[in-house]
Amino acid sequence: MRVAVVGATGVVGRTLLDVMAERAFAADEAVAFASARSAGQEAPYGDGDALVVQELREDALEGFDLALFSAGGSTSEAWAPRFVEAGATVVDNSSFWRMHDDVPLVVAEVNPEALESGSRGIVANPNCSTMQMVVALKPIFDAAGIERLVISTYQSVSGTGKAAVDELTAQTRAHALGEESPGAHVYPHQIAFNVLPQVETFKAGDDYTTEERKMMGETRKILGREELAISATCARVPVYNGHSESINVQTREELSPEACRDVLSDAPGVVVIDDPWQGLYPLATSVAGRDDVLVGRIRRDPSQERCLNLWVVGDNLRKGAATNAVQVAELLVERGLVGDRPARAA
Image (tube, rainbow, N blue to C red; front, side):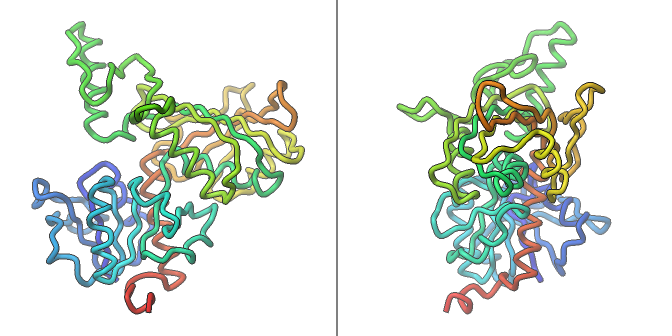
């Protein structure tokens, strides 16, 4: 099986290769692709020789069974269909394909059955904030139903990419040394020692950012509940890695905090850390490098009936992007849904 990794020099692309190696993903050959300016670079892959990055070109698409994309929406729009036409199945990390009706939006622990519903040969990975949230919510959804969600996110800079990580470092160093700040270039304001109530962009006439709209729309699609009431506020915080979320969830049926802890403790991909009296609750510093979604601060909302508050933390580069993409690829292989797209469509 030949696997293409498109966007291999980016933060998520490199993490994809790391996760593939860690999980001993069944690839006979992995090929790293990126833009022309990155061609010739080396991308580490497991314990073997590093992969030499190739330029993404039309004449290089043949012979792949799978293509894992993490190269941005415009690249996915242009190149994912070309890989499919050449016989590959695509797992895409960008936002471009997520809300297409004929493209399944899949979280491995939540809705793997959706893999059977696609007709394009493309499977979409959700937004990183949506991803970790629905892993925590699906057990609650199954146990008691969900009527309404109010979400506040505290998102790390690695979700924006390496330039944002470098900007936080430069601003922090300048502050510590008493030097003039290098200014804000990635974000609209300084991110060091600050909280920005804006993740991604505002569109004309909309009070919600594109990130907030993603969380609302994607959650409804993944859970299969178009009528689900959701409100989201997404903020960027000066943390290198790990997204944190405060989730207020109103269930259809009564679910006590104790029962919620039990349900979540038995759920795949979830670890409950909930002993606040001992200072034990999920932290961004605790989740780095982990594939689990951590949940804590589970408590009643005294202002509403059948309502709980949760604190949810996940590694946005791993479970929020790379790990789920590899898990989805593993499921595609297990179910015989990779490669030979034209033959399957016929």
